[in-house]
Image (cartoon, rainbow over all chains, first blue to last red; front, side, top):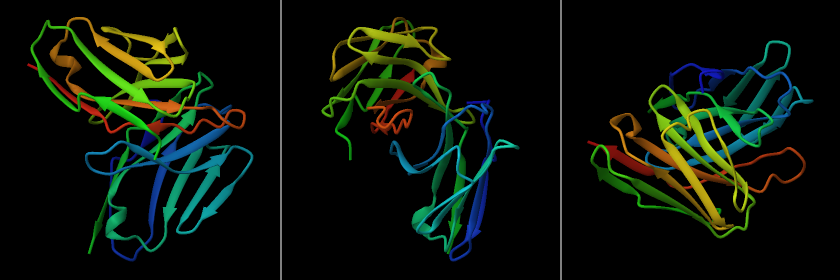
Length: 110
Length: 115
């Protein structure tokens, strides 16, 4: 997953907004994904964005895509303690598989 | 949740022994994947399958082999386990629905320790 980069750690206070950033590599990626991993569990799809979109909003989640800079971000509004997890971005490299970033650990402090 | 299970969930083995991990799905999805998760590396693809008896290598396939004799099962074998293969292994499935949209559903993981 070295080709998809994420910062390793983010700490926020409950009620604040969280912004998790990702830089991907393949400009031809059609879909970009955000997955969430809670402790001791597998990954679950949180949201995704199609490459012809700049923004997608889904309740507390906002995904922004800057194709020129190959930059993807996930904003979580009104962050709750239940949002504490590791968040992975992933790009579709066209090999029928996904390339994942190294994950950002989000810690939400009460 | 997608019907996907992994067995065993935990395993401790010794260097040089063969190990087989099993992934079982009840979703009839065509694509199945094996990843390993290590600190600082995220998930890295080991092998994947795009149909019965159709498999291909991922970025970290050395030391691993796979088999898929039926749609529901995808086996990952470590021919001779080494300490560098200590990791958490995740299986994933995908139906590749809607063109290139590739939502993958993950199993709960297998924690493997090689002593």
